[in-house]
Image (cartoon, rainbow, N blue to C red):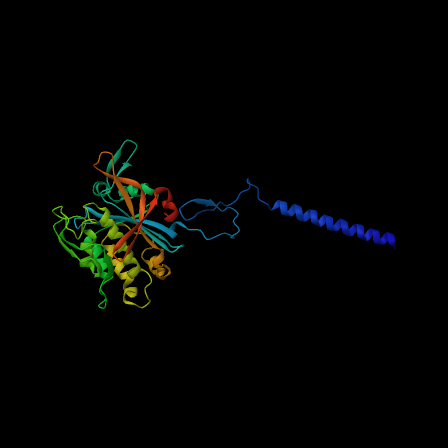
Length: 350
C-alpha cells in the first residue's frame, strides 16, 4: 500500500511539473520580441511630441490628437484687405479646456528664409501684404517653433459688423464691458476721430473699432490723458486688443446659458463672419467649439503680447525673447513677463 501511495504522489508531481513547463513555454511563445511584427501606433501628446504606444494596454492617460489642440493665425486688416491692423494666434486646447491668445506687433521685424537662396527681413505687416497668409503663418510660427496650420484674414467690416455686432445685437445688450486704460480724444493716424472714456463702459461694434484700431494720433502729439500709455507704437494697441479679446471671449463665447439669445444664434453669427473671411478656418470650428463652449472657464483664458525691442540699427523692432501675460485690473493693464524658454511651459501649441 505504501508503494502505491508513493507512485501516486510521484505521478501527481510529474503531472503538475509538466503542466507548469507547458504553461511557461506557452507564455514565452506569446511574448513579442523587438523583432516581432507589431502594429505601430503613434499618437501626439499635448505640445506635439510623438510617443510610440506599440502593444499599448490602454492603461495610460488620455493624449491629445492633432484635432484636440489647434493654433490658428488671425489677421485683422483695414477695409482695403491689404494692411494688417492686428495679428494674433489663438490656441484652443479641447482637452485641458484652455484658450491662449498671443498678439504680435504688426511692426515687428523678423528674418525669414523663403527658400534655399532667399532670406527676407521685414515686418509682419510687410510679409502679409507682399507674401500672403501662408508665408505670414510661417513667420509667426517660427517665433515659437509652433505649427500654424490654419490662418484667417478678415477686415474691419467683417470683424466689427459681422462678429462683434452679432454678439452685441440682443435688444437688452448694452455691449461688451471693458475698462479703458486711458481717455482717448484725438484723431487717429488715419484721420478718424476717436472718443473713448477712461474706465468701465460698454462697447458695441462701432465703439469697439475705434478702441482697437487706435494706436497713435494723426499729428503725433499726445495730451495728458493718453500720455504715458499711447506712444505711437503698436505695443499699447496690442495690450488693449488682447485684454478686450479676453472680455469678448469670456462674456460672449463661453459660459452661455442654453436657450439664451447668443447661444441660439451662435453658429449663425460665426458662419456669417467666416463667410466674409479669407483663408482656412480651424477644422471643425465653430461646431466643435460651440458644443464644448460651457466646458471652458474664464480662468483658463489667457492673453499675451510678444515683447519687442529696438535693434542695433535703431530702425526696427525685433523680438526681445519674452512675452507678457496680461490682465485688465479695473483699467490698469498688468503685465507678467515670461521668458522665451518658459513660454512652452505656459502655452501648448499644436
